[in-house]
Length: 328
Ligand SMILES: [Zn+2]
Ligand SMILES: [Zn+2]
Ligand SMILES: [Zn+2]
Image (cartoon, rainbow, N blue to C red):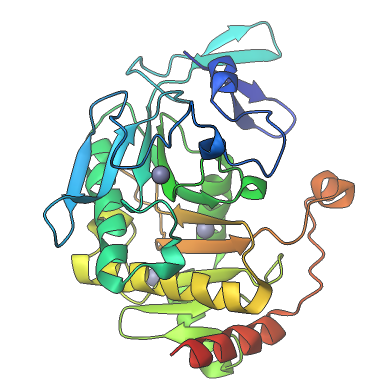
């Protein structure tokens, strides 16, 4: 079982998860796919019997699973112990890392990327995320769910087969707290509804736009080619969004990834789904960040939290838009 420890300098919780170091690929040399080891078949391919029973399976057109959710074998968060904080003196604050940690296998095919999935296949991914978040939202001990997709070793993926993760925790993490504070600071109705209007007005950072979603290279981009997908229908929580809107966002993720691949090559990337904490009354508008791993954080970025972005988002938008036009 992992521990939560509070960093008193930043007020952020850290998970100490010693058991996760036993994961198959951890600390192996880079660029050596784990599946190339014949003794270790891909844990997410349909031929491999999962070590633990699947939590959810969504069938594709052939009736077999196309997206499935498995328990993470090396969970960072597990169990349902209540979040009782112990103070071991004035500096050492600790709590059990209870919660849930699930793997979302994005496709039954090993050699695809979300960029290659059809809108129908993509929609199964967001449907699985919604179904799992709905269930976690019902659990009184859980406060927040973080859905992510890491692709490529540089982005933290330990297995090549396309997969994401859902981590549900008993506290509101620092990044969500920061964004909630941003919504609260904004002088107006909703920060992201206003962003959609403002970007429509400005017209130079819209990568893609349709009835359900707007994809932009944000004005405030800290990373080259980063994208923000804002659903047009205002919902606080992802799990309250309609299936149609989720399908629209899922297709836009595939389009964004494919445009990114055409613009900057087959790079590693992270996708982060942000939805409000459970049972909150605060203003929020769920959204998705797509961030290519093409610049590393140096000491300045880590020391100051200030990003230096060498590609203005207006230029990134032009590249991504021409990629989408060429792919169409
Ligand atoms: Zn596989
Ligand atoms: Zn809104
Ligand atoms: Zn966000």
